[in-house]
Length: 88
Image (cartoon, rainbow, N blue to C red; front, side, top):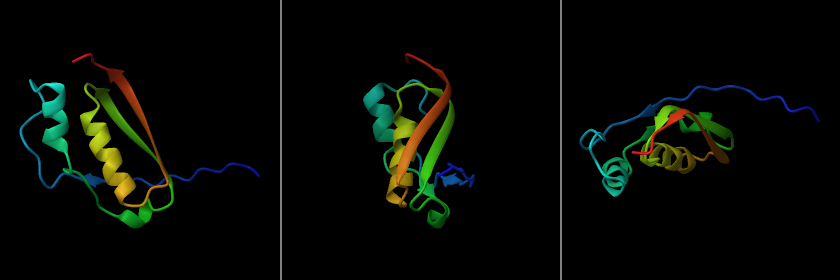
């Protein structure tokens, strides 16, 4: 079988958000974005492998929260990609 990926772009909404992540410690960052993201169209991710892309990963809190939202919407698998990484 030939693997033929299809692309479907999905928007994640941020209906609630605490304060900006800048200056927060690792645990504070995770708490700040916990349950903050929502998938706008769950049917587009249900049963699919989803790739999340971010410019810079610092603590991983935002990517974790986004990944949890995508999985809660029925994604079969989640991978992440980042252009850069910070040790902050």
